[in-house]
Image 1 (cartoon, rainbow, N blue to C red):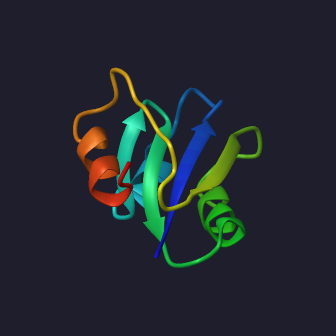
Image 2 (image 1 turned 90 degrees about the vertical axis):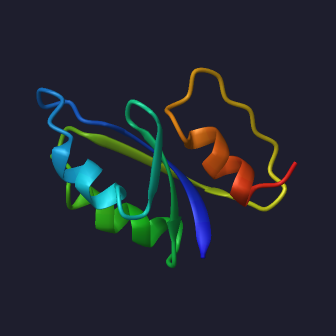
Length: 90
């Protein structure tokens, strides 16, 4: 299963409940609208699945996290550091 960094901008009155509901079973939030997820498909497939939960003015960016990737966080959401540490070993 691949790991992805997912960031989105929900422009319509910050209505992001639908995309949060789609992301929650896949991973953990790291910042307000940034998530770390595990997904069986490609970044393009994840983008297609998640974009169905967004409105036309919203934006979405997805990047794959590879093994042994260099990373650092500061004031991240609770649990995000442990999630990263358990999946990406420095």
